[in-house]
Image: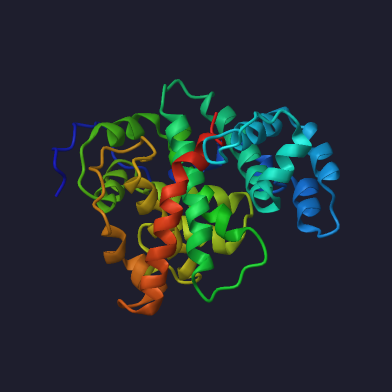
Length: 308
């Protein structure tokens, strides 16, 4: 039961065809199909030089700005400010350069999409939450036997709430009600969205990503990140995103699009996602908890340089 009665809303939920048509009317995002391919290929190569990577980054003012903000954040604790792209590449390392190169074009394009709406919404909070979830999804997957040689894990976390952005464009009135209705759990958010629209943000986001032909693993992770038990395939990705999402909320980086209470410490251990990933309490679960505790301490400082 919702903690507040549902505000009166004169419009009945849309049909599936109407919902799909509204989502399909949203502008396409080029970055979802070609996320900085040149840079991604370069940083994947062991032969790449910092100077080559820096040269590509210099061509993108937004990426350059985020890189310098990140390297000069509290997280790195450098005694002198870094203003040189090549030095920044040296300090950050290839992994974080890859993450930065993926996050920047997606955020820039989604930012342009949200500017087509009339809503003054907490976009910075959403990006902070999305990037934090991406980082922790990657950390969590690394504690499992699943071996990944690409960036599927990071992208699944980064895009898990893309349905919220689409809702702002396609269903702004309904989103406003979701944002102002107090709820107790994420499941109640989904229920409210389904009552108002017919689909929840996870299903809306998955449809949007399928239209962009992203990988099945990412689509399933986004579609089932609140209900990983229901995922027909790739449940580990959905489970990792669910746990990462809860961990980021625990740090106070909520995303700003829901009126959820503060999450309790270790609540994620009781989630379906945790059970799928680690089973019952045992050596794997204890090791994961220790690894996650270290990541949580670093997360706020790491995000400081990524979101402008």
